[in-house]
Image 1 (cartoon, rainbow, N blue to C red):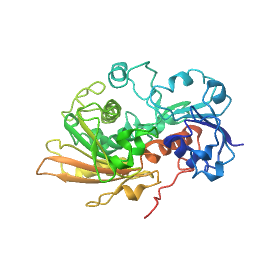
Image 2: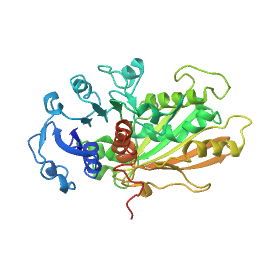
Image 3: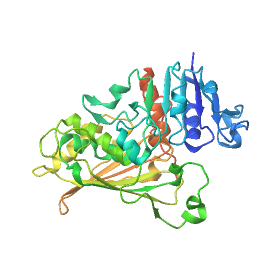
Image 4: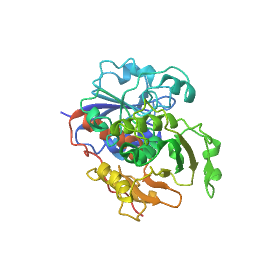
Length: 361
């Protein structure tokens, strides 16, 4: 019997992508879709591409509506999930696609988000290196999962192998990302109008203000714990010594992230050791793939796919490792990661309902 699923925020981009992927998943049945201001309207009025779900009507997002399902996905704006998660104690599996349950640090939450702090849930990035192996093992049997921030998981996956292996210095990370505006959600914003972004590239959250920074530091701290050493060979606590300059830039593509992340090379490390760290981390992974030496990904290659493709360069003149990673922010960055984590938690085949194939041209 299929798992009965409810998706909140179903009229938004993340909610729509969840529904697109879940509609093709053989082990789930989408029973309920909810929204706020759009409640009472047909789902296809807001997600006209989801023709197989034309029979569904958006219901009001309330704890009562969401209760009684096997799985609830929360695709809500940051700060809104907590009020529902507290009321879903009887739901076997809840997956939050917002930020409410990602951070372990109260001070980091207060500084970057503000409002009520909610406890951290199991982080939904299966391939992330952590103490004891990979995050995948922690997701087995999980009942509460925090799907990642798309920018955060892109940078974290890019650099985690080097941090864990001790071949790069995490105290001087620089990441610049080209991102599509769908990552900002569906709400009307002047700076995201087509007339504002077409033919332009616009930086935002510059100078250490982006909310995904503490999430990246937290993930890389977990990766460092997997290697149990810093670049100087000593163990440190939490995210101490992990510093990142993070600059996202909106570019005129509907979806996608191209992240260029770099960090200094640890003294004495060879080129073979550097590339070997990434090959060891992702050589057996389905959804995170390191490209051959000299190759670098395009966002077009991952459109609609649950893959993160990365190319690695060793810049000896600058003494830095450079990793370029492309992924679809709505799939591997959000909805695909959530469903991949769901599959692991439920003991299903990890790739069920997901694809490594993009859409081209």
